[in-house]
Length: 112
Image (cartoon, rainbow, N blue to C red; front, side, top):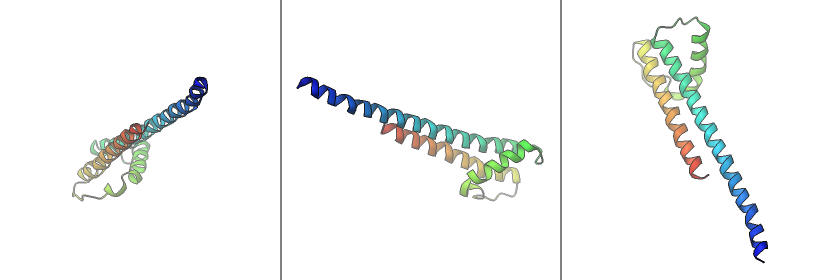
């Protein structure tokens, strides 16, 4: 009877380990996605504040990527200076993604 009880624990232990591994991978994916979104926004801010050529392919690429991921922060503040406009609004969006991905990662890892 002792061997039967031990063999019943192995599948439960394996399922728990598998669940922890899956949640660990999910937490890592969420963290990386958050970092990539944050990085795209920060690069857009740096290119804008640094007066990068707006017709350059790299500059337009990051502007095109940054616009949809800035969400409602895109026009939260409306300073007259276009560089300050991008710095404040897209900077806040970058902080938002960094915080959200960090919080979600901690929540996921808590349940792992």
